[in-house]
Length: 165
Image 1: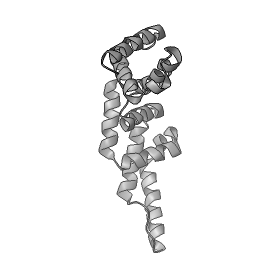
Image 2: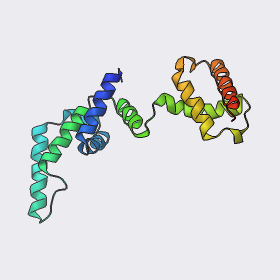
Image 3: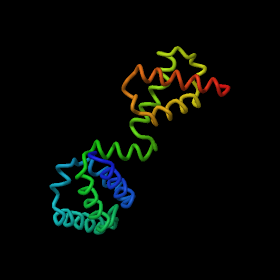
Image 4: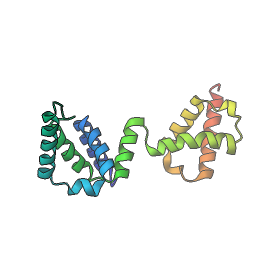
C-alpha cells in the first residue's frame, strides 16, 4: 500500500460496506480482478434479474435481492482497484490488531532470547516476550541490525531482573 492514508481509506470503505464488502471480497477472490473490472453492470443486472425470475418461476427464491447483487458487484469493483496483497495486509492487521512488523517481532523475540542469548526457555514467558517486543516495536530503528537487537534485549532483560523478574 503506497501510504497510510490509502490503508485507512480501504479499511474505512470495507467497514462501511459490511457485510456486503465481505461477500464482494470473496467474489473478487473467486473471479479475479481482471474479470470483475471487465463485468458490465447492465449485463450483470440482466443476468441477476433472469436468475431471480428463474428461481421464482420454480416456486423458489434467489439467494439475494437484485439491489444486494448489484451493490456486491459495485463493492467488488471498488476493492479491485487495490492490490490483493494490500487488501490482505490491511484486513489481517485489522483482525489481529497487530502490524506485520509486530507479528514478526513477537516471533523473533523468543527465538533470540533462547537461541542467541541463552535464556532458559522456562524463563521466556508471555510477559517477558510482551515487554521486550513492545520495547523493540517502539525503538524500531534497530530492528534489522541483529547485534543491536541482541544488545537491546540484553538491556531489557537486565531491567526486568532489576524489577524482581
